[in-house]
Amino acid sequence: MTRTEQLKTRARRLLHDFKGDSYSHSLHQVGAFAAQFGKDVLVIANHSPWLAPILSTITSSLEANDVSIAEGRIVPGSAPNSPVEDVYRIATYILHFKPDCLVAVGGGSTIDAVKAANVTACLGPYEPELKAYLGVGLVSKAMSRTGAKLLPMIAVQTASGSGAHLTKYANVTYTLERQKKLIIDDAVTPDRAVFDYTVTKSAPQDVTLDGALDGLSHCLEVFYGIGPESYELAQEIAEIGIELIVDSVPKVIDAPEADEPREALGLATDLGGYAIMVGATNGGHLTSFSLVDITTHGRACAVMNPYYTVFFAPAIERQLRIVGDIYRRYGYISADIDTLFGRDLGIAVAEGMIDLSRKAGFPITLGELPGFTDSHIDRALAAAKDPQLESKLKSMPVKMDASSVDTYMKPILEAAKTGDLSLIVNM
Image 1: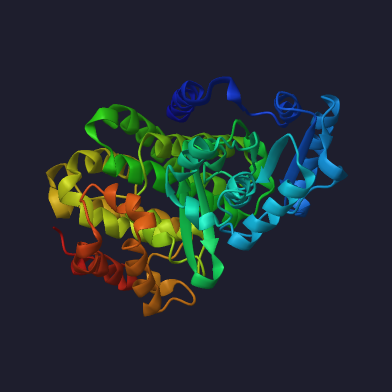
Image 2: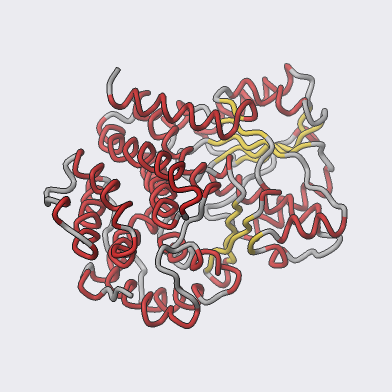
């Protein structure tokens, strides 16, 4: 058995331990899952040509299990980054059609939008503004206080990356503010999940690579910030997930129709979803929320994580030796990292991460992003001080609070603007 096959076997075991029989890799299982919750479902999906065969299989599965689609129509899904306008629109369909169950079909944006729409529709009689539920655990608190319940939800993932089909996170973008915000609550975790990794072959190459680097960021950021109580599990998830992605990105670029790298990326990014249920993302994701108007989420995280790596380095030498060994194994680090410590070790690992981004054709500085201005730095610093995003600061391996953001985060962002790692100030 090759090293890749060994990693994939370990990944499958971890994912089964995580989700058990509530997760299937067959689109034909959607109907059976839906039948567990009722006879009338609301299907939400974008009308993209590449989704058509997937929706056809799902529709047939529902029919085979005597489950009908509400009003016989598929509700349009979400634009990228789950704009709040799409959330409220989907919530309106839920309120009018009153289904027994929600079936969200798409990438992370559509799945997250449906999670948030479920909250808005079901808790709206008590507080109709979605902002009331942004943050950690506020949906569950409202449900406990009011006795309200969310509708059962089946998430059918079509893109490797976000892990939205497996997690308690719902990202929503407030378009006028140009800022992404977040619901973190076990209550919004989909009741059932389906992901056939082969469907990703029909996705555009950019979508595949964005998702791969997003999944890597989930594994990486959680591993950086994990506490001692979950360290061993986070390490296993990160080691397997990061290596599968680092190994598979060049393969999927060279052979986009090949099944093996698609499965490897699917398993790895699913592990990224597992990771953010074990711990939490931090710096890279926090900054990415302020870049929604100029780049995709995966690219934003890929740009930022090397710079946060240098900042965190003195506090995460143990993690960096493990991560650095993976990048060295696949030729992205030539330095003798065994002899490096602290900031120097962080720089070596960061340079390996930057080389992988180059291989994927990604920008490696904020300044390379079309439309980037210093106002994005200002916005990111303001967002870092927002109490609704405080969880990202608390999840950093080097703890920051609102009072220290300008002192330490601003130099990180200035370094990311130009690629000058020397600008980063370590605590």
